[in-house]
Length: 162
Image (tube, rainbow, N blue to C red; front, top):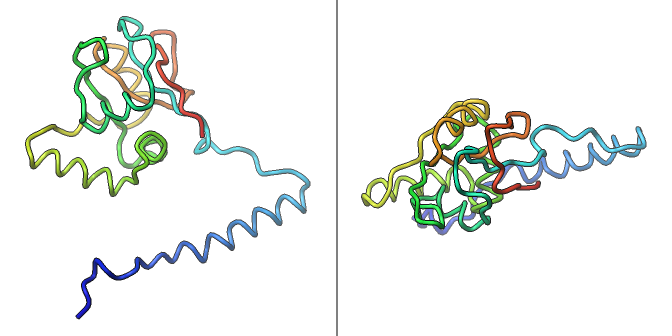
């Protein structure tokens, strides 16, 4: 019996992808305009509290923090990472952009870290509003949110565009 690892993955979405793209093209031709941008395509903001001394971070540093490769900001201060729930599409988009990982790959990565004792998964909040509140209260916290959840007690340290 062949090894399942050597078998090509069955990806039924590929055939539907062509249908979806064809439908969008037809919509564009019929209406003369592209469909309105959905919230799923909006930018993602990586934020810290205004009380934090951190003013800017690059994408690699953010990836290291959220993937458990680092537990400290570049200045040496400890970082408290606050992640979004798996039920939120923003989490899928964040890890795809910053770490080039799917949620399944992320869960596998976090399980390896957990079982090796090298790191623990970050705290999770249910949505962007709760992430914003938790980050506001903790100068060592970092999270990512939808722009609609941004308020004046937060500082944007990285913008992730679609």
